[in-house]
Amino acid sequence: MGPVELAAIEIAAQRVKLPSGREITPLEALKFCYNLSETDIEILIVMLQGGKYDVETLANKLGLSKATINRSLNKLAAIGFVERERETRKTAGRPRYFYYIRDPANLLSKIQNDLDFCAKAFEEGIKNMLLSSLRKAVAKTNE
Image (cartoon, rainbow, N blue to C red):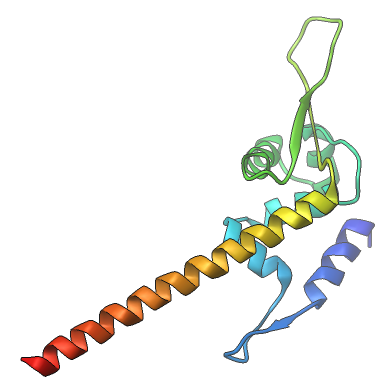
């Protein structure tokens, strides 16, 4: 078993108990809040080990198609998890891009801020839903 699989198992073993009693992993929370796929998570785990990766290297490492890897990398870049840099070439040909996590501490901070934002949005949405239901119940009682 390689370091990627070990890291995934270690993260998956960590569980958070919700008020309902249901237990989830941090990866499940990330998947939910950012709409990440299993592939997105696999790539993120690889990239958290440091270094710069191109699409072909990740495809070979994970045994997935380049199109699948490219789609996930674009999503991870769009949400600010990874950065992309174009390879400087002296020869003609299609440009190659390298993807990397600039600063894992900043990534963690971003995730914490985003999760706080999500929690506040859920809180506000639930509060509005409950207030609306309460108003309807009061209006019905006053009829």
